[in-house]
Length: 456
Image (cartoon, rainbow, N blue to C red; front, side, top):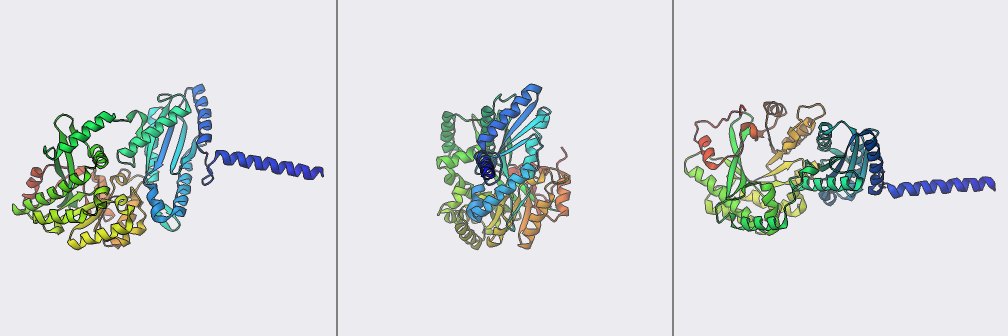
């Protein structure tokens, strides 16, 4: 009887331990949850206070995770979260902490750092690791992340403050394009009154001729001009040049994106038709299309009207859609893209690799081009860098009879690596920034269209 009671007591102790563990840990990944993270962070800060050390809190949120769940199902989504947890754990030391604090949000505490230089090297390492593909149930999935960073003691002295500041910095990284990181000192919160003023100014931007298009060259691997990408610029008379990363989300929020997007379509077609009327050899020009613009039922008619009014042959217009735009309503996207292709317009997937990026959906889409996101070129030649991912994308695209453009080419070394792995086309600051139409005419009027890399 005594031994039975002892065994029962042991079972109860074990049960209590399991319940205590479950109360403080995420059941899917086994990582500490937010409550346990706060306790562990306070303990880590106490150690750093005693030794006068530095610690960093990284708040990591997966980009477009909802689209993985919607397109591939929650089972794949859950497996992806486990893979992310494993990858993060494999990158930290024994005194560091990895926690899962919400659906697709993770936090890391990096202790015993050697000052700011080491602190601000770490987020880039985690971003680079997240850009590599995950293999989930025989599928290759890419899942980039946005990261916010706060630093002890410069940004705060307790766990709650540091976590709050890191989360706010992560939200800033999200708003400024995702797949990047921000320090809490880089937060820029626009006051509501300033937002309202900017919205009012944006409503007058078209009629005041403040919006214009610049054009960035696209070259083949022999460095010959073969295309252009139209990039929207807003020059405000008082505020100066305003980034599209700022005013495009505002335009979507204010219901102005349809008007602006339609203006861009008409201007791209008008300018390209004008060049051809001047006698320049035809060149294809690409225009970026927002999610709200593409989802509108009248979008196809807007494209056709822009082509008809300019009398531009549709083969010289290319529309760039991001993965997120396409995947939101996949079946409808396929039908819309087919109609556009039947019209004669070419379609490319922009920023490939930074969103949904399961390679399996591509064969269902009638596409022409994949554009590899610039983030994959940053560590192209480094050991353990992004070269295998780039090779995979190029190989897959060619098997599907798609062209590949690498965005953000900045160095001759990147150019040579891309040549070696069979990339078809390139664009980036190695050949200059986007320029006004008059500067493009200087290139179009040359006997040849070869460009040379910048020397600066």
